[in-house]
Length: 218
Image (cartoon, rainbow, N blue to C red):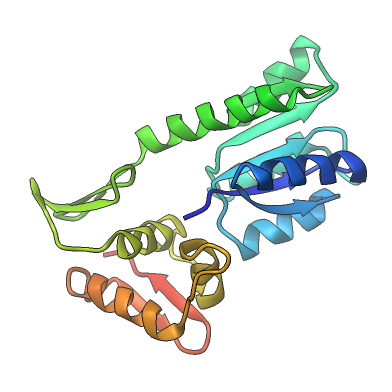
């Protein structure tokens, strides 16, 4: 499952440069030139990481992240900015940034920082679901200490649904996240993985007809 990044950068050329570089490194990218478009994308998709410029039209990146954090969005975030004063650093980290890079950006350093932030996120996310535990690194579902017979894609689907925090995840979004470009993804194969999960979570997975699926908390 490709790591999905939302990039917000109002310099179109730099935006395209970052997009091309990170896609070549295997990341799935959604890009925005202004905070309103970025906010809309954050509602439509589930991201593993945000890359936000600070100085933007309409409102700055700090304001956008504060709005997202206030809504319960804990997606790790790296700011890319020309600001380097202590007050800006304090503000950025104070509202929940995970890292901060000063422009001009060294692309190799950016890649290392992305990898480091994502590793920290993975270590934090050994998820407990009732009597089950979910190892998001190894993609294994456990009942107490016993590993269950659940395929890796089904576990990836479970992570996606749980992390959506009760929001509906569309079938198209699931297929985009679970299958790489060029792989065959059908509604039938998706239903197979849903059936696997319902064996263990019969009351927690709701089919929203014609749209997708939603995780229902106990």
